[in-house]
Image 1: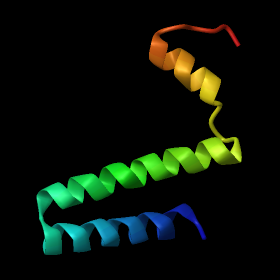
Image 2 (image 1 turned 45 degrees about the vertical axis):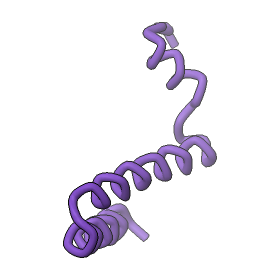
Image 3 (image 1 turned 90 degrees about the vertical axis):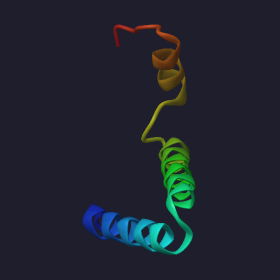
Image 4 (image 1 turned 120 degrees about the horizontal axis):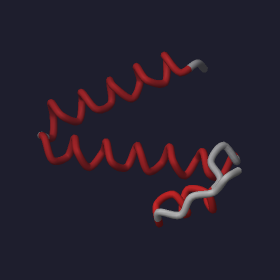
Length: 63
């Protein structure tokens, strides 16, 4: 599955939620989708959690 198909599916899901349940449900679903994507990238190793935490804390690294 490529990124375009996944993006279209996510957009369709968000559109259905927005139409049927309203704005705040749309926001909650969107936030959980972002968190789920972030967790998936951490588990697969695409994102280094230590470097991410250092960036959020304001620490910089040269590597």
